[in-house]
Length: 346
Image 1 (cartoon, rainbow, N blue to C red):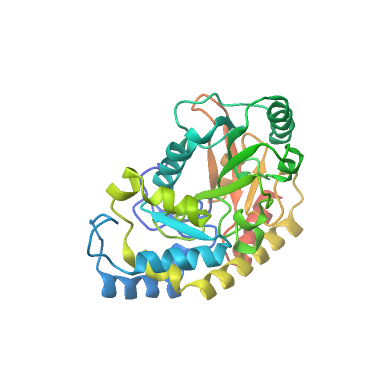
Image 2 (cartoon, rainbow, N blue to C red; image 1 turned 90 degrees about the vertical axis):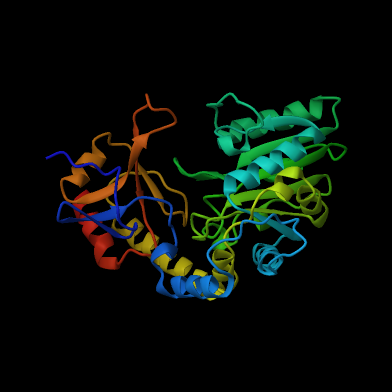
């Protein structure tokens, strides 16, 4: 019997039931298990009772809910930036940022930069990030141009690889750079949950800006921009920000009061990753404390499916490419479930 996993009608969790059978689920991007975290759900329900289901007004409206500015202040403090801006999606956060800041100087895209950051269609570079960084330093230092905009992901979550931006220390100090980094897969997970912003090099000639979806590890349908107060104020004056409706206030209420929940979840995640790493006997690629594990056996997903285990498996970067097979560990997995996965792999 051929099973269709493309029209699942139940919440994602550590198990999925299809045609009367339970499948262990090791896919998705709910790295901290927030969609099934009862304490977080309780906060969300509190937020709904306090603020209602949604808010269709503009952030420029003369009558506004205070939770939005509160959530932005909390986010800035939590992730180490001077200020923050929150929108209804990560895509919107990225687009309003790049469209506003790209005019500052010559734009350079890093390899595999997410399409949400594209000003227009970009060439998908196939060279490695480290090679690109070397070439970029040489290009900037040898050019008479002074102003540059570098746009990159914070990591390659497919391979996976967390990028090191310390190459910027080698750029001549008379060059001015805006660095825009998409941290959608790292925020809440990498760097003890702090994500990329606080880990970026602090240089006088580099303005760091981080954009991210809050819908992955953080479990909130919203987007965020982290940066200096001047940059955030500039972005808040854009027509895109002024004209767009904000995310549901209830989700941001939960985000504000869930710091302890996030901390417990990330420690659980790191513990689960450690259990999986120690039990692995098959070769795979992974980055320290990041929950994605890339396996190169092309039939890997089918072999696990026969043992009622679902993993992330789809062609990437295009539909004509071979499937990329990844195991995703989450905070919602139990030790027994991880050991069942390890037994199936071995």
